[in-house]
Length: 301
Image 1 (tube, rainbow, N blue to C red):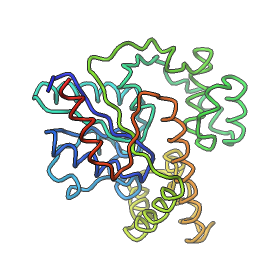
Image 2 (tube, helix red, strand yellow):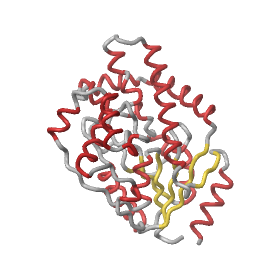
Image 3 (cartoon, rainbow, N blue to C red):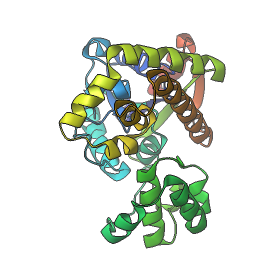
């Protein structure tokens, strides 16, 4: 095995990526780097579907629990840390396996993207923070219609950041325009293919398990430690609805139904993002035989 190769395991939420990655890490002497924008946060275990110590099966995992959820974590910060970890794993003669569903994180590493440094515009942010997500989305459509096509239109934090970058640079740069260069390693990207209907059922089943495991209590405890309701809204998915539940503005069932729909929409956005990258090779989760065959051939050549 050459020491400049990495494997990426990607796919939408609830597709079974994490377990597959652990199985492959055991077989190919690998270590895992998480590419998930929510799992970087400490204490957000149930809420982000974070892999447990038991599920890790003694395989080292990186970029989990690295900062408090009150703080923002950019794709540039992720890439910097992930690159360093990949180089370290390679130096030790092991196989880096990048796993997750945050498409921008993955592409930044895979394509060796050089990201523009746009500093926070506090005056602009203060003004935009007073506006509703619907208004922010219309503003983004005016300043950068391309970015508006693939952003979460209900996530104020991402909308504000996109407007901020567009205001500074003229538009939010596309990946092709970021001055990308060939990365220092060869990459095999394996996508976990799942039927939309089956995936929706898995998301629903998994969310009920999270409710039972205490997703609301976990968020409540984080709130007591300083995680504001506003920040929960920025984190998104189920955390958009937890403050409403805690304030008795929606019922428990409304919270569950809304959260499941939110995750299903998120999975759809993830699939749309990954479809753009024609280098991804798609396999059914249970097709371990062909996945192993493809990885073996990749590592030999």
